[in-house]
Image 1 (cartoon, rainbow, N blue to C red):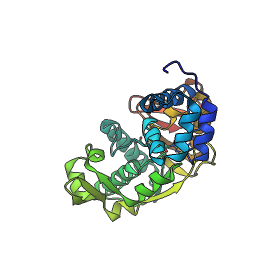
Image 2 (tube, rainbow, N blue to C red; image 1 turned 30 degrees about the vertical axis):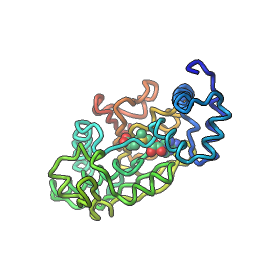
Image 3 (cartoon, rainbow, N blue to C red; image 1 turned 60 degrees about the vertical axis):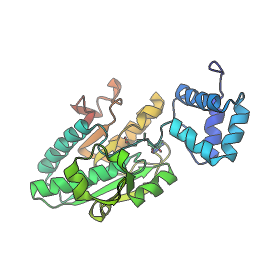
Image 4 (cartoon, protein in one colour; image 1 turned 90 degrees about the horizontal axis):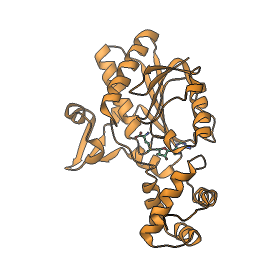
Length: 267
Ligand SMILES: C[S@@+](CC[C@H](N)C(=O)[O-])C[C@H]1O[C@@H](n2cnc3c(N)ncnc32)[C@H](O)[C@@H]1O
């Protein structure tokens, strides 16, 4: 079974029909994950597995979990968020803006855009400056967006939220669930958008696109990075995930601000 050659184009086509677009995902990554699900179900042929996928919503959810497509949490890699906050603060001080626009691209269940909104509210308080802030949160996954706009989270995704911020910006609904307060939610606008097939959002001061590019093939990564470059205002900030980076041949588009934290600036 581990050596089974899979027709990845066919898998991608069926997933697309089921509303999940993984067109630009790396083939070997998709094949590994599908093989693992087939093994778990003791299914010997791809046709049989795709049949199950079409009929069984639960298996579709399992496969998506396995592709770890929606995994997220608040302040994912907390030290990198501290660096992002510093970069954002100097950008705000330098530009003296009255409006600030940030795009959370591939926002999953909303943990990332709400993290950004909390940082913005904290920065306004800290600097004594008021600006109109908006976080545009986009994803291809409608179900994830529906969950995101509810703003309700289990403790597990809140483990990196400092206790001071947890009591300030969340309402406790039960011992294990919290809801993001309306002040935070009012800064965030959710909408469906594909980084691969849709044109970019524009006039952004920062783009946070973390743990999305890793799933894409090199060509698609380059295509998406070029779109992000167009989306950004001059010297706008790009914040990538821990294992993502700007390829050397694109260094004319982005200057490194903090290599370890994966923070870049539009050239
Ligand atoms: C692993 S999650 C990352 C969530 C969050 N950015 C983080 O770092 O915690 C990857 C997200 O990218 C989204 N995604 C995948 N392909 C996409 C595409 N073509 N356009 C927009 N979002 C996409 C998935 O639906 C998923 O919600």
